[in-house]
Image 1: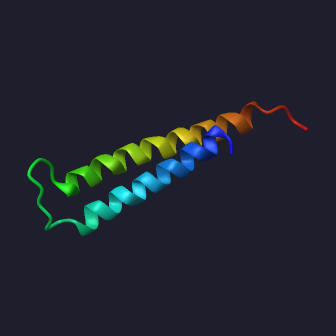
Image 2: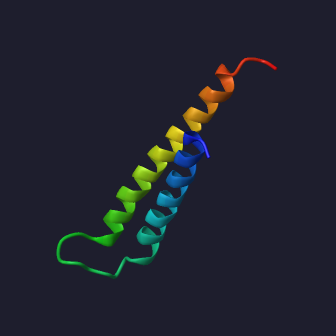
Length: 67
């Protein structure tokens, strides 16, 4: 698995976990942080990783010499 695919998969999984936290932990309260805010942060990190994977994929296909 190359780095672009790994970033894309990891970003998608992180975004999905963040979305689940955002949607399903509205009533849970912890002393330090709110799980919905943690979900939003994880969604942002996941989106950034997925975007990085997409950019690396596009760069790899555009710089590849024609066969």
